[in-house]
Amino acid sequence: MVCFYSQSTKNIKAPIRTCIGCRCKYPQNTLIRFVCRTGEDLEMEELKKLPGRGAYVCRSKTCIEYAFRGRKRINTSLRVQLSESVITEFKQALLKKEIIADEKNETASS
Image (cartoon, rainbow, N blue to C red; front, side, top):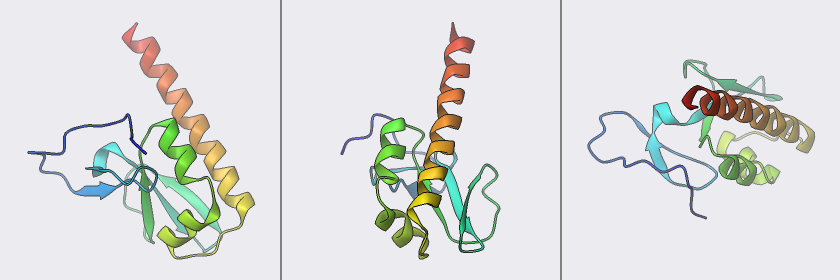
């Protein structure tokens, strides 16, 4: 799978993280981090300061869809056992947030 959200990671002095959707490496500040809180709940994190095992995904709709397609990828990355309903609910919230962010960026650039 090729991610269309690509940036050159050469000569960047930021921590590099891997997107669980496309498996590409990007600077940490360009990815969305989410953590598993209390073993039953996923939470998106803006400041990257919450404790717990976290995972990263690109801001592209394609990567979000691919990363949350099944339970195995999320459960393996976070080392927990989440239900399909929790993962689907979080995916929908994440897609909604990214669509809103994309719309704001498009209207600002117009």
